[in-house]
Length: 144
Image (tube, rainbow, N blue to C red; front, side, top):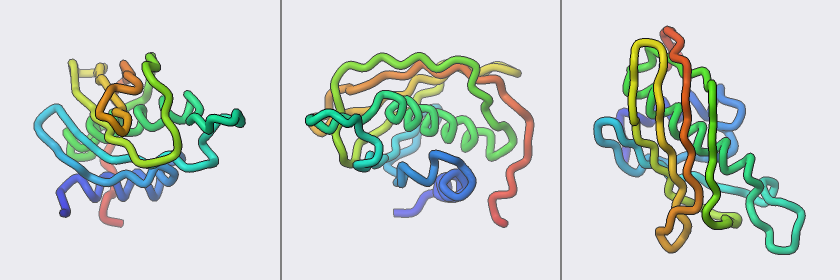
């Protein structure tokens, strides 16, 4: 299933540093809410025997999903510059595909606050991110 947001995901995967790694796939969009599937690979895990995904990778995935929501809702006319990322880790994650959800909490003229969540394979919240961002006016070239 294709969606209008696919060009934003493609742009992010082509030009974003971490966007290449998570292989996002569109799940669902409603105003102020976006669901994507993201993938954690072996190179994103801690060296311990359990093979849990490193916390920075989890935060990075949530940073990307919440940013894509803001970019999409502005039709590429703003780009978020993160000013604060606060992650709460509830459960460990391993290699695999996970549902990620971003919800816009508040968007002003210059600042936005977005919540991001990753759910484990049992549908339970594994991590929550509160993302504050300064909004930079831009015009992304999504078709070139």
